[in-house]
Each structure stands twice: as C-alpha cells, then as structure tokens.
Length: 338
Image (cartoon, rainbow, N blue to C red; front, side, top):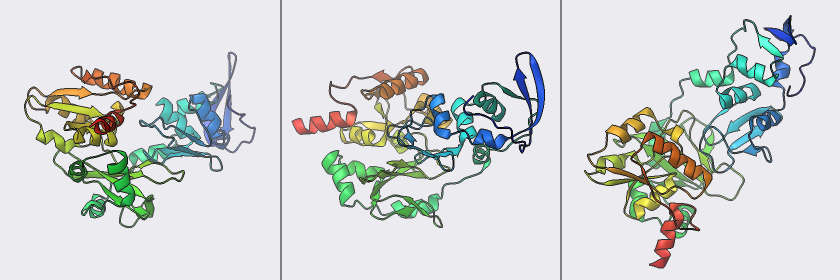
C-alpha cells in the first residue's frame, strides 16, 4: 500500500478489510488518510516522472512540464489544460477509473467497498460544472492585434513567419499580465502571444496564451472550459478540390507550413480532436483533398502520426531531414538557404 492507513476512526464510508479469505467489516476507515498519501509518490507509482514538483501532463500532449504538484496542499494542477484535483482525483483521471476503484488501487486491494456512499470529488464537480469561456471579453483582447517587440522577435526573427500568416491567424500579444475574462484575476502571463482558436466559420472558441518570457512559468495556457480541438479550422473553407491539407503538431509549425505556402491545421494530440473535427476531416473536405504530415522527429511526434493514421488512413507521412526536429526548423533551414 502507498503509505499506511491509520487507525483513527473518523471517516464516513463503509468498507471491507480483506485478510486472506476473511472479510471483516470496518465501519469508519479514515478516508482523509487516503487523501493524505503523498501525491508525488502516488504519481510516481502511476508512472508519472516528477522532477522539482513538476511533470509532463498526461492529460494533454505536453512537451514542457505543465503539471505542478503542491505538496503542502497535496494537490495537482496543470497550468496548460487546467486539469486539477487531489490525490484520489489524480488516480481516477489517470487510470480512467471510478472513485471506488481508485481507493482500492491506492490500498493495493486491502480495502474494498461494500456499498460506498457516493463521494463527489473535485474532478466530478469540474466535469459537472458548466464553465463557459468568456469569448465576448476575449474578442476585445484580440480585436485590434498588437505585435510587441517580444512577439516580433519570436515570430519574425526566430521563426521567420510571414507577416501575412500572422494577420490571417489574428495573432496578438500582451506586455502586461492580463485576465482571461472580464471580472477575473490575472491569467495570461507577460510577455505572451495571444493565439485565437476559431471554428470553421471563424467564430472565436478560445484564446491560448503562449508565454515568451524567461521565468519558470507555464508556456501554454487555455482559459478553463476551453474545448478547442483543431487549430486554424477556418482554412478548411479555403480548400478546393484536389488541394493538399497539411497537419502539424502545434500552432508554431502550422504557421511555418502556412508561410511555406501550404494550407495547414494543427492537431496537438489525437485525443484533442472533437467529434466535429473528425467528421470534418473525414467527410467535410472538398473532393480529392489529400492529408499530409511531417511528423516531428521524436517519439511523441511519431505516436501522434500513428494515432492520426488510425483515424485517417489516407494520411500521408513525409520525413524531415536529419537534424530537423520539426517542420518549423525545416522551414527556417530553407529560408537560410535562399
């Protein structure tokens, strides 16, 4: 068992303690002691690699540690996708199991529910809560896009993105910490890019913040309640019969593909696709449109390609030159050669 369940009798659930073939009723096991199991130890048992109280978030395609562990409160929170909760919630969400099954797993089966009283975890509350993104307010942030000096260096100097692509995507930037809804606290750190995600008709879904500073802060953030799916969906309306549609892993590579003259979207992970996205790519494209992808030269990149290939068997993979980790680097290499 991870840790030890003490003998204090203050809990409120009805459990069985299993000892070989004997099952003994234990009326008041302290559930708080299960919740007090060190969250980083539990995360390690789940297979999550924790370093300096941070880890790659297992709940979205994470390249830089966005999952933070608060060892004082014994809780976790991802500052990119918003996943959060206590130690039991972590087990439930990671293993996709019920509250009862999570408790049994955490105690190595030494405790088994008979008729567990329904417990509403913070994860349950989060799923039930109707959280809406304040798109009216977000629209005011990006209505008149501003490219500050940090953004200009990031987009034009470092990544050689075509200014026409920046305008098409509606990318903006902020120099001061900014809320993500009109009455909220500071959410987007500064300096950051503001990256609009829109539906196929151009309606705003949410805005992703991309931190460009040097402090130890999450690089990517979405407002809570964001369900964005595929990036750059409006390009679908510009496809013609026989066109190529290129798929990248993130907005930066999508901008590079667009700058190179391709029509492109970004899909960070196969699990991030909505049912509408899948239907759109399967049935909503003009006749003869083909799907193409340069998978990133790493394990997550190849896994994404394989996952998408299962959804879209017609997807054609292309190999990046040796030494290029993603299309963004390939694109910059081509610019330098010119």
